[in-house]
Structure formats: C-alpha cells, structure tokens
Image (cartoon, rainbow over all chains, first blue to last red; front, side):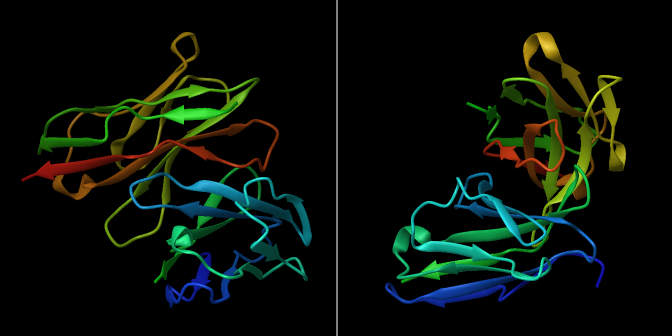
Length: 111
Length: 114
C-alpha cells in the first residue's frame, strides 16, 4: 500500500506484560516518528529515527519504552512491563521532507 | 519551550455556517505550522501547512489558515461548513529545519448539524 501501516490495530495487555507495536513507513521515507495520543489529547512526540539512527528519544516516558529501526525501514516500539498509564493510541508517522504522513495507530489498552 | 494551544475544545455549527478555529503557538525561532484533521474512524490527515511566504495558506476541502506572526496565531477558517466536516482538528508546529518533531495542540472537536 501507499500509506503508513501499523499493526496490530488493537492490543489488550495485562499489567506487567510486554508489548511490541509495528510500523511500516511509506517506502523510501527516511524519517520515522512515534507519537503517543492519550484520550482527549493531541499526539505527543516519543522518538525519531533518520534511517536506522535514533536521533531523538527525548519523549520516551520511561526506560520501559524502547524503539528500534534496524534496517532503516520497519520500526518497532516495545513497551516492557506495561502499566495502566500506558493505555493510549500509538501513532507512527513517516516523512520524506517536512511533511509527516500518519498511520492509523495502535490502540493499546492495559488492564 | 515549544507549545501549541487550541482554546476551542468542542464547536457545534449548523451546515453553511462559517468556521474559525483558534490556534496559538509559542516557539523559539522559525516555525512551521500545520493543521491536521481526523475524521471518525480514520487516521490523521494533513489539511494545510505554512512554511514561509504568503501568510494566507489554502488547503484541501476549502480550508484556509492565516499566519499572524504578531499574534502568534494560525487560525483555521472555512466560509461554509458541510456535515462531512465533522471531525477532530489538530493544530501543530515544528521547527523549520526539516524533519522536526511536531508539537500538537489538544484538538478541537467539530460537530456539524445538518
């Protein structure tokens, strides 16, 4: 497809479980961003990759959050030992230059 | 610190009414500004963007926005709304050096009554 895809679309986890969220960016897009959107809020920046290099991870809320993009294409956001406050929609966006295209998001619910 | 604020949390209008959604920003240095829309059940889509030049920018679906530097504002406008404009609207800003992270406002939910 031509757009950004994310999987799974919905994830329910028990508190303490680890989760992995996948993002497939638009082919050829060098830049990839992850955002977290809590209910009723705007998206908040988590981390940024340029190719395989993670250039900014200042938005990751704790060391339980980890992101990678080993081959400069697909990216995975991993959350270890999930907590209830991690419940949110996780958005991925890719960019060629200056315009970010968003995926549909993964809605994570931690029980 | 960079910030974007949207003061209208929920706006309800009748079809054919005119729309203006407020957005104010606080950025150190040159800023790029964006409006995104999220229709029910769909992902975020770009409505319009301002990088430099003409402060009045036109986007898709008849939307426009005006960058007023003296007021730190980038309000979204549409002269006549349609029921299909019902959606959540997000204003966002970034630095102007290319591929910088977006800072979003909290969003405005727009409901159009037929």
